[in-house]
Length: 120
Image (cartoon, rainbow, N blue to C red; front, side, top):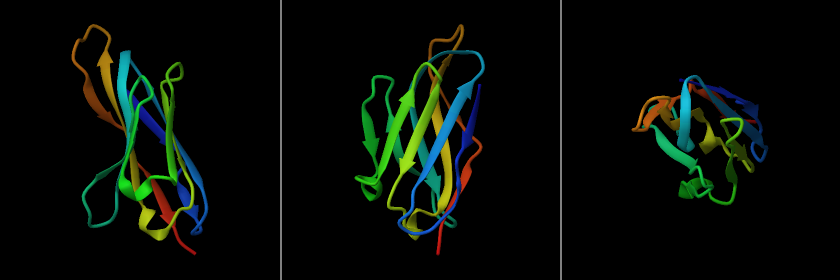
């Protein structure tokens, strides 16, 4: 199973970015998908996640600014980030809880990380 993330970059404060992450491989089903971030010198933290049924959870720091969504048919999760500020600067990682073909228990898989830098 592989997760490929796209969409990071440099953006000015107040700007927007959209991240996407697609899972591929021997996948039977995907439970939760989500985004985490790790700023320099800090621990990795949850940004947002979404269940297979569409239930969402957000970190307090991004509520009202970020929106997580997914396309189950495409095995893809998105993160729309608006009103970005310098505190959002971090490496963003996608994660998916995947049941592989022939398996029964979900395992967590991580994408490679994409840098988001918010700076003027």
